[in-house]
Image (cartoon, rainbow, N blue to C red):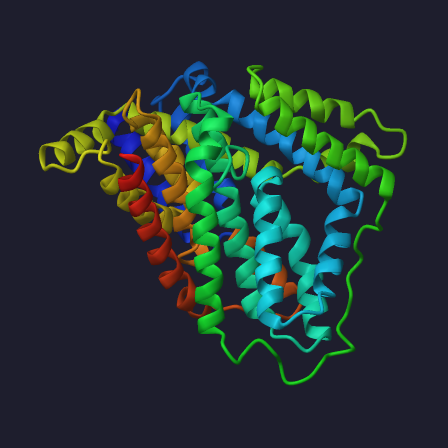
Length: 410
């Protein structure tokens, strides 16, 4: 088999497996599929081992790794659990509670990454809401969508934004100024959509006092203070001219110098699956790009008047691809083909892939985390139930993005 044919077949099988979330009759997941795809690119001679290693964006992985350690510090310090419990005791109206939850999740996700917030908040909220006699579904959807939108505001809010920021060398400040305002507007509009769709359905039949409560970290004031100080240091350093990945890793290194929290406990909660997924996808996409097929396809689109340099065309392509294979794989695939010298195109890619994550369950890892964690606590959210809100929310968010592009002269 010619290497170009092998590369195309490996890429196709890998991305199909990523889209499906697994392979028939096997227990393998997206991460395993990506790793096998990367290995196949080397075994079949598409890439040399050195080329495969060189295709991995070390800066992106270091940034992701460092931020995960900061988030783990707050998780082990009980901060997320404490805050989720405090939020669940909010005594305002159910509608106002939804707004508070979405706003809090969005702000936290902008600094501490949306996946971590969803992982820590979902079990606590699912139990607390059922005990209060509230319908958990709109609140958990609000958590997933709110954290997705909040994460879109900054370079460090989600994995795809980190990749984009590192690849394009974008300024943290300029990214925030361009992506923050439309994301804030989208969060408010998403809240309005959820209020309308679940009008009259925010309460359940009766409180469930016997709901099982899991074992969650106890709140530790000192460890939480360390984590919050580290998060503040990360944000301050990101506004500086220092290399962002090494700045964040340095802060994470300081957190490991602890007398009470063992290094093994901290590193054990790092999402190694996501980091491994990134590594595998970098190699698979590099192998596919070596065939020249993506470049030929993009040239064809440009001849048809649909270039990626057109922000509206880029938005639609990003949304479509994100809802086929999820937004992280979509970003890894599109990033090498982005127009050079145009920060706006990168901002649009980041926002479009993140907003697209709210359309269907598969669009974002944060959605999958919320659905799975909620299921473990006895709350089931079907694909149809999610899409009932996700489709109008995403359509409205994309209209906001289109308007913002026109306003800013994209």
